[in-house]
Image (cartoon, rainbow, N blue to C red; front, side, top):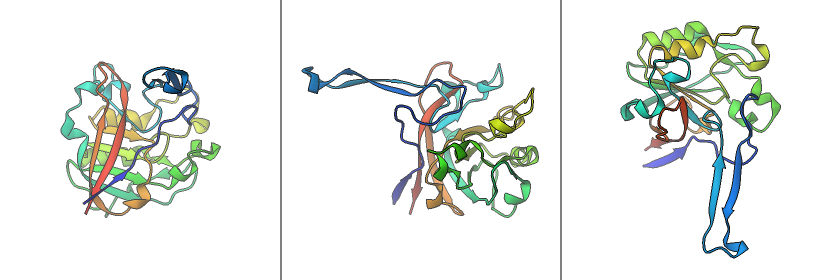
Amino acid sequence: MAFIDLSRTIYAGMPKIPILPEVEFCPVRRIADGMPLNISELRMATHAATHVDAPWHFIDDGKTIDEVPLDQVCGSTVVVAVSRKAGETIPVSDFEGAGIREHDIVFVHTGWSDKFDSADYNEHPFLSDEAAQWLVDRKVKMLGVDCITVDMPTGMRPQGFAFPVHHTLLENDVLIIENLANLEAVAGSRVQVYAFPLKIQGSDAAQARVVAEVA
């Protein structure tokens, strides 16, 4: 049995969506400065790095991250490999035949994780509205992507963009994980995943250490 880390390393100045503040990792106490111990301060938005979106992110009366049941963030996971270009939708046909079952977690490997440190990371494939509804109809409990968002790239969004994929999933209690990494290691397989978010009271999301357990 082995574990594969599917999470992004958190570091100061790491890439994030434009509306978020910079990620900061600052010294509070350092042994090198004559202190008896090392202590650091981390400042980051809840939607930077690998994180789980709670329903309250878009639904005002939805569950906050501390209210999400633990069994909803771990379980049998199908990792679907797709081949789509920048700004291209991921259709229902990419999920058909993947063996997705009720209460599964579904991860989508697009390969965009390799672009994390470049501007190209912001121009990614995204879930079609129909695919989001298809996953809801199959009663999956969580969807994860190796992209910065499940919705249309920021640069493509028309005025008044309404985040349809987030709404379709979260309104139906399907959690979302964004900024996954290393999915190539488990693409095309079924694995056991553990994606426990930080227990932040009243939060819309939280960072998570996401790992896959493989034989």
